[in-house]
Image (cartoon, rainbow, N blue to C red; front, side):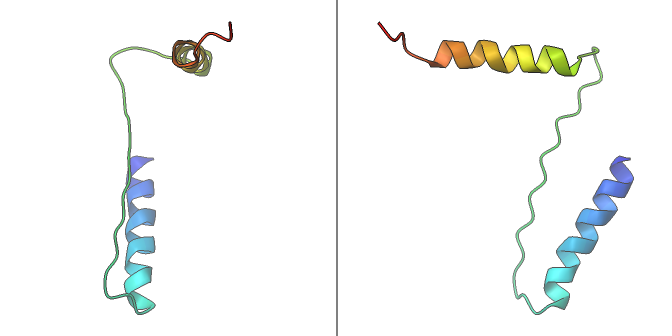
Length: 59
């Protein structure tokens, strides 16, 4: 769950200080979409479409 993930991230972050770090920079990026159902196949297809748009023609 998200709560478990945040708890683990907090422990990892604090561990760095416990190990002697004076400064710790922790970044988490979570994209949580709940307004529509999206399958992994949909996500792969989206990445493939974007990839084709980025590639210049080989002509």
